[in-house]
Amino acid sequence: MFLNIFMIFNVAFAASPFLNWKNFESSPSPKALVFISKNCPCSRAHIEHIKQISKNNPDLKVFAVATEPIKSQEALEYYKNVGLNVIKDDKHRLIKKYKALKTPHLTLVNRGSVVYEGGVTNNISPKHASKLYFKEVAFALTEEKPLPFSKGRSLGCYIKRLK
Image 1 (cartoon, one colour):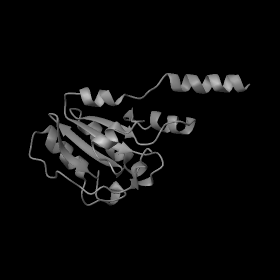
Image 2 (cartoon, helix red, strand yellow):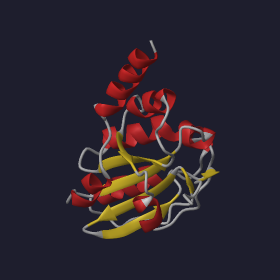
Image 3 (cartoon, one colour):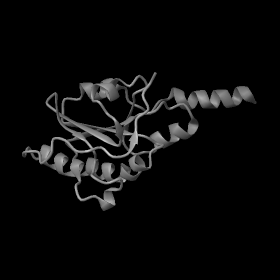
Image 4 (tube, one colour):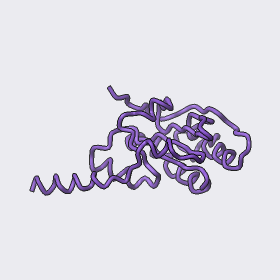
């Protein structure tokens, strides 16, 4: 029985639905990294908002970055079903490179340069936000207009650093 459970668990992780951090680095189009956590209420509250922005801006490649190790079946299911392209950043390469502090944290890159970094909105819930940083910057970027923001305050849960 233990062997059967181990085999099922191992097969679930073997067919990984996740992207490697290199998928983000090699994408030439404008792209967004959104650092998320299944354990952060603020991060979870922004998922539908992020998915809507991704849908409304097809020229912008949106990648979610899992900020914690995906070791349990629960975590695997959460990230498989989040509805975004998810990058496993087990070694925190992207977290360190883009200095992500909290979830959700947004980094927008265009032509190899960071053009926005910070919060997705200015509230822990997008429904109550007065500034929709990601929505406004994504629209301006895809329409090739001046960006209304280059920075925004990140709200949410601190990303636990690897030791």
